[in-house]
Length: 136
Image (cartoon, rainbow, N blue to C red; front, side, top):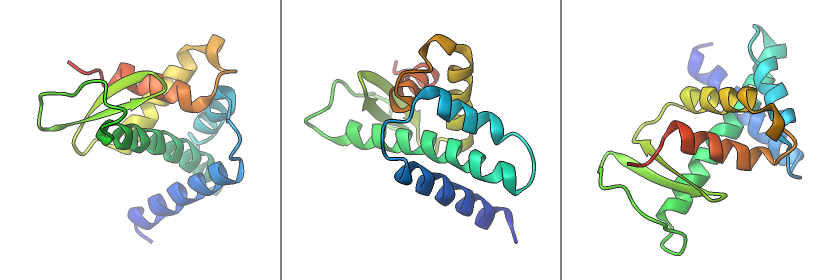
C-alpha cells in the first residue's frame, strides 16, 4: 500500500471523527489529537488524520468563504494566492498549500497558546492560519 491511500484513509478517518463529534470541539481536544498523531502505527494514524483533516477543513472553509462575495473583507492582489476568511480572521494561502504545513501551523499555535485551549478549535485554527499565512 502506497503513501497516498494511507493519507486518504487518515484524512477520511479524521473527517469522520469530526462529523461524529459535530459539537464545538475545544482547542485542547484538537491539540491532544495533534500530539497523539506524532508516533508510528495505526494508533497514531487516526489522531494524525484527525488533526490533519481538521486543519485542512478549516483552510478549505476559509478559502470558500473568501470566494463568497457576501463575506469578502478584502482580496489579495497576488494571482497565486487564495484569500480566506473565518471567525474574523483573514488568511492568504499560496495556491497548492500543503495540508501538512497547515496542520503544523495549527499544532504550533495550539501548543503556544495554552490559555486559549478552552475556545473552539475551529476559531483557534482560523487564527493560527491567519498568523501563518498573512495577507499583504
